[in-house]
Length: 117
Image (cartoon, rainbow, N blue to C red):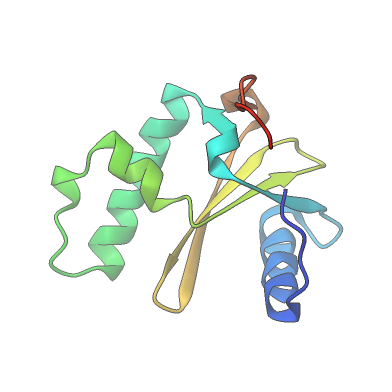
């Protein structure tokens, strides 16, 4: 988890919490490398990424989007919602953030996080 010291980052995190989980939501930022998502969640991310590309990225080729590219599209910021136990994946495009919730049953923390030094 990341610790926030920058007030702008804290403000953005609060806005995401309010929009995604309600005003009283408590969210924590995670490193995407520490989480695994289900194949169903990957399919949802691919549909969402294609929709964002169609609408906000003229000239992009969403029909060529791979599953790996769709996942990478949504890992600019990753949050864990304490209340729902779900994950929130966000893509930052220009001056906008596009976030998608992943229900608790479609993700988990990886068990082997490697050697911590």
